[in-house]
Image (tube, rainbow, N blue to C red; front, side):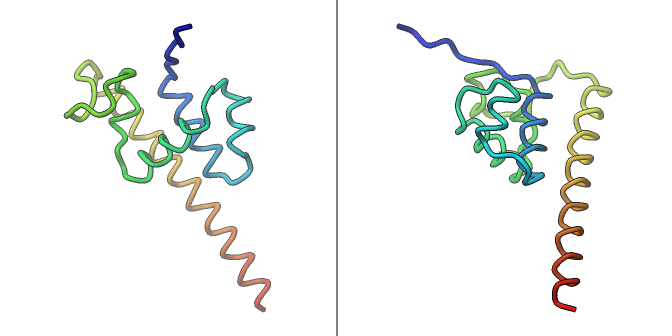
Length: 109
């Protein structure tokens, strides 16, 4: 029996990263919520995100390791939207970190 390859949209990948980085969801919960079949996919996306390899999220299945920085078909507006989404996620992560840091300092006081 041949297994069908799944394609996940850019938005699904970003939502999975956002959920994982929030610390409020397990891989299993993310998989159930977003319909992701394999938890290793979440780990790979998170690794790409942390390395700043955002171009990988837009590459079609099977092309993730080819040389280049993403599809040529993206308009400037699409590129800016993706960059904006990336920056919004980074900002949310920073806010979460600051909350955790404040709670540590309050415990120490």
